[in-house]
Image (cartoon, rainbow, N blue to C red; front, side):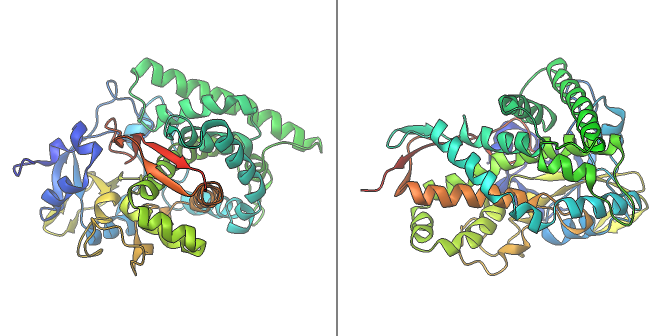
Length: 409
């Protein structure tokens, strides 16, 4: 590894595949200036990314993510792009407060928990469709790609055969698909056109007292907090946000979780013997192999972080993935520790007012997957090289994850 590594090299393919050793080379310089990369929804090859400060240690990331007054989440690059702005992710207070109150009711844990039977059914069907016992299976090619897409299609009352459309929309918007700007734009336009039509049709059904498929879409339409509800445009953009974020990030997390089971047989065996360990495995996987790596903020005032004098209007890249590997916060970070006492401090779901509201849904899909793997198979063995994606540093996840699922004797 090049010890003269600089911040402007962070988006190189070999770094994207395994960024953590490179974060280590830069952590003592944090915040360091000169990184250029794309927020989700923007157009590589069309939009021009702005140079930004990079924060890499746990305390600096926490400081920026927590201080929503000094660091705005509004993304001018995305707002000026042809893609739709994300809900909540790109909002500041007071609008963020209003929207989050409603969305928090939609995503309340009890409501997500009630989806367990439906998610279990989708998990079982996906395993039946894509897993072949005692033969090599690349779980990223189908299961991890399609389960989250099928879940999102169900939640929004979409035809089941649109699961591939959901997948394509998510990978285009979240930049993990290596496609042309024209193709990316076409997927964004297609997704927005579908949701504009779909939401309008379902709002009309509900207004007429009819039943409407899609529990999450129904919740977005019906939920009120203090007499306030979402507008048609807000519902459309919430659908787009939940679809692209929920399908893409969860896809990578499922692949990373299965990689942990395959690459750490002792972890898998511990889970087989004691399924109550899933919560600890889930949290440490989020720290060790957490998909979300970074999000941008924009300074609203002159402010000092560490030794850096950040000026009003400067862009700041919050590297949550680097914070998860800060040895000051997580001793021996390259070790997967089943009983890490502070694993719940991981930043893979963000921090502060923008902490991910969809986390309970991601956990539900992951828990159902792990439970059914345990019920169906005795071993999960690595059968080929795990290949990590190298297209975008927005997420850390696998492009190929070949394993064998062994049937019980």
